[in-house]
Each structure stands twice: as structure tokens, then as C-alpha cells.
Length: 134
Image (cartoon, rainbow, N blue to C red; front, side):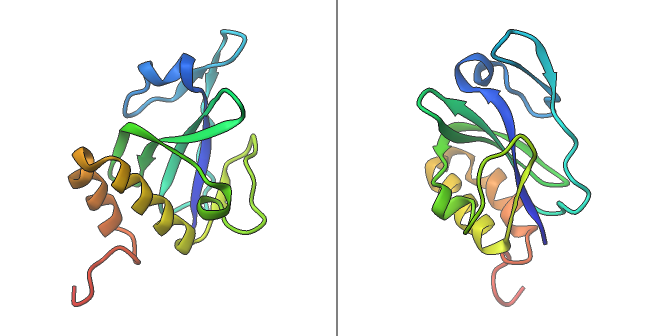
């Protein structure tokens, strides 16, 4: 299964207007930008991220084929833990593996306990997210 992160603009400009189903964001020049389509090979977790001052990137949205959750509390993305070896932020969606997706979603869930039901439902739809015995 492939998972990916996609840029959703600057945090200060865009987070307050972010909603499930969003397809655009405001660029630093004030123009409206259309979010790219997810790559065809991305069939798992989809995470939208925004940039904060100082080149700090935060996860703000979690999606799969059935759900689209805007996070109440953004998660600072740790490139080593949340991108995987040799991966970096890019204008194109950054794909990553199951292990990395698990770490990222677990950390997002820990930061957003008030959204645990929605996030747990996404996790359970991942092959690695199901409880043993199911």
C-alpha cells in the first residue's frame, strides 16, 4: 500500500479556512491554487500538510477513500520519523511506506484525542491498522 503527503499552503493563511473536501488553498502571493490530484498509486493514507514560519511543516488533514478529517491540533512533522529514509518535502506529493504511515497516524491520533473515533476508523481500514484476530 502506498501513502502520501501533499502540500496545502502556508498555515497562517490557510488553516482557518481548511475544511473536508477542500480542493484549493491561498498561495503566498494571495492567488488561489488548486490542489493536485493524488497519484494513482496512492491507495492508502493521504495527509495534507502546511508550512509554518521557519520551514516547519505540520500535518493538518488526514484522508483515505472514505474519510476526510481536518485536524483540531496540527502535528509537527519529524522528517526522520514521518517521511522515511531519504524522503523529503517536495512540490509533488511525497510517498512513503506502511511503517512510516503507521508512525505518522499514531502520532496524529495522540495529538488529537478528541478526534480518535474518526482517526481510528481510518487506521482500521489500513492493512496494518486492524486488530489481530479480525
